Image (cartoon, rainbow, N blue to C red; front, side, top):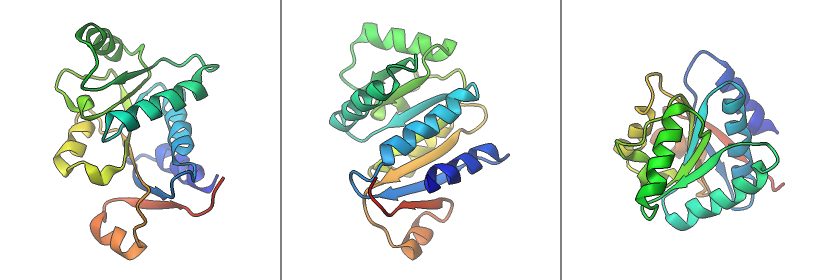
Length: 176
């Protein structure tokens, strides 16, 4: 609840959110990310979640689809193995705004992937992506989207501030 409150405050300000969410496996990072995505959707924006592997992207897709099934939210997945016909549909729905949440791998960084109104970009296991790759996501919109990067790797706060000085840090330090 504390972390969601911090994110809600950031997203409600006039500045772009750049927040690192740190927590153990099973601590609730995914549900925090989903609640953050819902905040973006409630305000007329799209959201995306980028994971470093297809397996992790599929896990997120299955989990978030389950959470969203009663909410009438359009969620799709885009990975390297997504068929061309499916890609065309995803690209079209992204650009016209009917696709609200896109989950995927590095495939989200392709030039053909264009959002109508990206409001939140979530990056899981962010240390597995380079700075250039991450910055490609924020350039998918005329106004940079809010950014939430997640990691299960424990990083001491002083080291995190040195490595990620441009990021505010939230730590989930208890299990749900």
